[in-house]
Image (cartoon, rainbow, N blue to C red):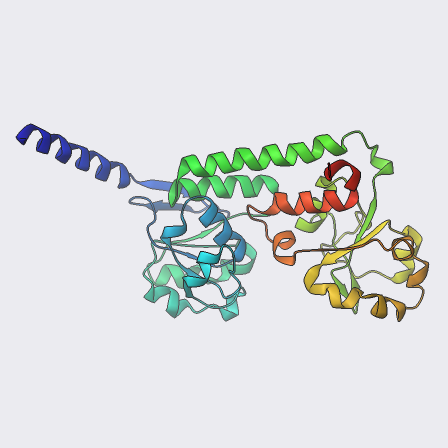
Length: 299
């Protein structure tokens, strides 16, 4: 019995040592973040990072999220620290949660870094600009706060699913792929440029972005420019659906002459899925690809 007890004690010590192994990484600012062990209390400043944390096996470590963090369902039970923008986030609430790590985006939350650091908190700006960023961020969150094996398996699955979509549309020549107009806003008329997450999803789904030549991320475009390009599909987030009802479109001068409108090719995608650079981005690609190539994806 004494030998068994000693063995169990040794095992407990070994497990504790493994848990307490120091963790360090470099964030998007180029700043090295060091922790004495895996983060056990994490605050997320964006819905996409919240989704990535839960998907990477770090859900139990999440103690604070934004009011927009509605997925997965468990996130709704965490303390709300404010909205997404820096001006709506309560630094005081975050400090009270005593997190080991606060994660957010560089452009959206970088300005808060100094406040966090003055309060003795670790802030990490994590990249989510493109698909490779998403893979890297999920893997990182698994290593520093969740389950590394779970995170790596998820990344492998996401890559395989994305490759499967690519394989199904590979035979379609680039010039023959459906032309997609993504309507971000209607007054003024705005679309998505090639550098946006939405623009990347269009291409990955086998479409051509109607405004792939835009110099800005969210270009304001004219109806004349849209008419000249005459897209095959008009797409938007479902939250924008009220602006693209048949009744509303009928009031838009000249829109009835667009090929997409004549053919009834108006497609609405879940706004949360298509806008968040997190683990559900492949689902957005799959949904769009299914809309563009129903004969290939409905089998």
